[in-house]
Image 1 (cartoon, rainbow, N blue to C red):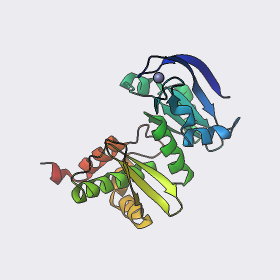
Image 2: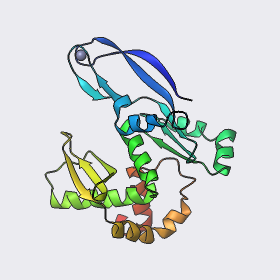
Image 3: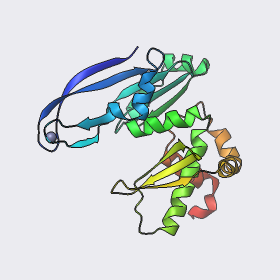
Image 4: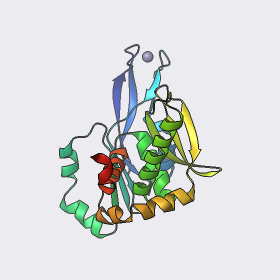
Length: 219
Ligand SMILES: [Zn+2]
């Protein structure tokens, strides 16, 4: 079941106190429309009625998709203890039942996970592809300051959007060849860190995988 709580949040620009609905539990089984609300980011978008200031608003929430056996947690600025707390009997039971868990930091990252999983991709491989593509972009465009990169799916298929510090995005296709090649190159590492057992799969995860797989480059 979906759970939400209304909270007064002051506008960072003008200080106007405005009520915002924080969705603490999102359950796509009881309300499939909530998936769209995440993908459109409408439930993570703050807009001030007074001055019009708009910004993403990230807050802790649980995204539960029982049909596909997925649970994604949004923990902005999480601490290790929060991850450790998830290591409990209930989680273990669900893991045994075939559930996959992930922890992300923002509404955007949550939307990205949903799209990745919905396209039957392995988010570990996607992160490796993103890392490779970001490094290639930096080589080609040294002037472009990379702030974030997200997988998405568009008319042309798999793609990655890379944003700079002004929120300007560069979109590049993610070829299936690259995905398969990456999967093959990192097969050993991927086996050591199984898809079902990972909790946080992000750019840091990909950097670690790269370091571990190419120890000679880090001398
Ligand atoms: Zn305002």
